[in-house]
Length: 124
Image (tube, rainbow, N blue to C red):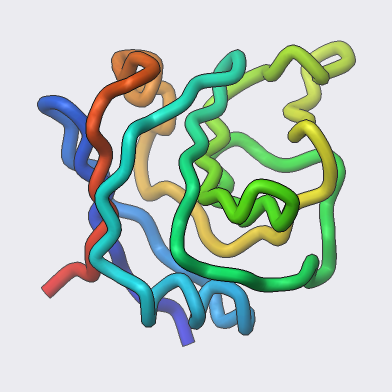
């Protein structure tokens, strides 16, 4: 079952939906989470208190996908090309579990700089 969340960073408040994967359920159970954002090209990632194995791993993702990266126990927001991308693809550092999708235009995350505080919480 899909679960709506809010991602708050700086002046942004973005709505997203977690999918029904086991990893997404574990992330939802850990919310709210506040962390310091890291950027890698047009990806934001940050460590979260979830330890999950790769579930239906993807090496290329879609614009606006939310991912969980097991090696870093990290929540990832993909809003464009990364340093690992080839051509126009969006490629994480290594395979991720897709746990959801941003609602609306994910390009707004270009405004978030490395080190910014980011919070993920369940929508009410």
